[in-house]
Length: 162
Image (cartoon, rainbow, N blue to C red; front, side, top):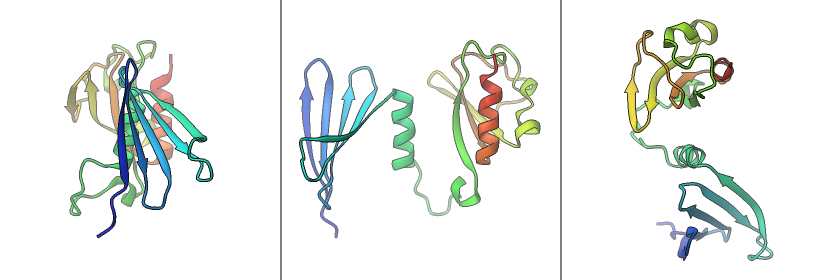
């Protein structure tokens, strides 16, 4: 059985909590969980453990996407993973300035134009699976799109149109 990594938790008053992790191979990483939900990911030099070599600040949705990448919610070997099929699953936010704000999903013609499908929409904390073409989009929605890398990028560009 592999030795678990060492982890230390440090409260940062007024900021949040810092989690320091030293991997079995000796790499030092830290994550600062800010009170506003954002995260800072830091990597330190191996020759000087106090010298930060990388620091990336992530918004709450970006931190969630990284969490999904590092620890997918389902590990059932019977489930197909999109990457095994050459597909990607993207979260695409719809801004209130988008030309599609207030329009029906079918008006975007995303599947016809990009080959990508909208499989769910997140509106606030509520997931809306399999939205119909008559579903009315709203600024702040997050569309869950499945398709090729090129198709998902094209869908994001279409949804970003003002």
